[in-house]
Image (cartoon, rainbow, N blue to C red):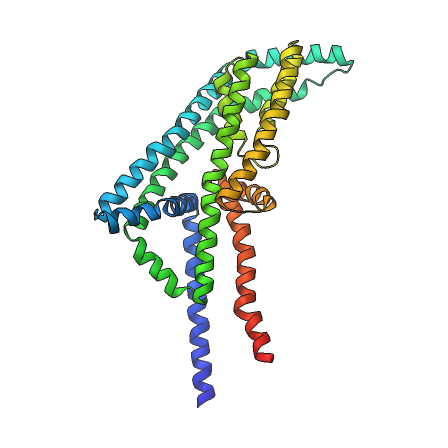
Length: 343
């Protein structure tokens, strides 16, 4: 009788787990488009949580008023500047695409000059392919712009309910996560640490590199310095190569155009000053916001951008850090217990 009861309970448990997993997979697949919006709302919730508690519990504001005010503040402080940078870059991309024929012709002439100087004929096939790439670039940029607007709207919709119901949400997570209280607290503090470190540190380092690059572009006399500032700031968020993907080709372009003095100055400023600022400032920011190993950041960004797009800059390192943290928690929850029992 007991065996039959145990078997029935086990079958029920397996059935419920199977149903939960099936529904979870179906919901995840159908809502995959909103994953970036959800991750963005989690990021903003972590950044705004303490301020929300201060306004509601210390200042006596209503939850809806406090949440709306913080969301409006984050929009103007964070998203509007990013939107302006994106708009500058988009306008230049549109100009390049609309004048792609002239650009391709100029590149062919420059390739011929470089070929004559180095004694090696450059194959024009790659330049011709660039024309096809530019022709298809603008529709992609327009699609990204529309998707970004949709994702931002969805993110703020989710964020509002997170802020308003923050305490209840945290209590529910705290009660239902099947771990010891100490490990739940460790999980929460580590997640907060890496989210704050990446969401503030990565853009801050990129902006500093962009400003340093802008100073150099203005002093050296680079045409369209503000365009190069935007490009440098965005590229500085990329792993490994970073801003070098901008000032490296820019240096080569100056030499190819015969501006040897400007090319030397750009090489010194880019690889010397901007590169040094990146290394020094990144070390200071990581120590101040959270002591995260550089390899976690590098590999995390590579993985995160492929999985989540731009928001992966933050959540890629989070995935790797979370994986390492779960290994530590597993060891604490089960391996240590097993050793104590065997003793």
